[in-house]
Amino acid sequence: MPDAPVLYVLNGPNLNLLGEREPEIYGRETLADVQALCERASPGWTVIFRQTNHEGVLIDWVQEAQTRAAALVINPAAYTHTSIALLDVLKTLSIPIVECHLSDPATREAFRRHSYVALVAAKTVAGHGARSYELAVRAAVELAQERGLA
Ligand code: CA2
Image (tube, rainbow, N blue to C red; front, side, top):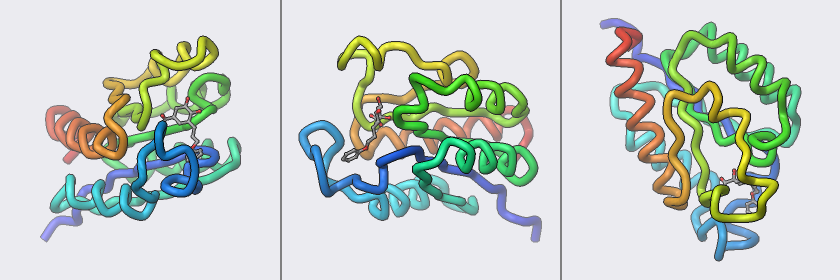
């Protein structure tokens, strides 16, 4: 039996607080709930699901994804709007990248309207709460299959 294809789902700063604060913006699900949802949305795949509060760690994991994964779903949280370092590493990937947000940053404060990640993402899913992850995972699986990576 061939190995199951691998999907990386990476989460940026403060998303460890999911379900504890600001439920009116981010919903009531915890990050563990989101992980379970991602696993359910990608049967037959191995999901590597991680969260960090540190930009350099996120960059290390993106580099790792290139060597191990067939696709990447990323919610870089506030680094979406600030990190050229993250953009630079994402540009090096040959696997499909799907950008994912719980809220819709385009309808919030002006400083959230620009996304560096959108410049390299094959698709962006935003504004559906935890369901954004389900849609993003499905899109990432489909893109990897279309490109013959899984
Ligand atoms: O909507 C999203 O998923 C965001 O990526 C969330 C980021 C925000 O900076 C982006 O503009 C949009 C913030 C993540 C903070 O997560 C929290 C979760 C629960 C409680 C407090 C913060």
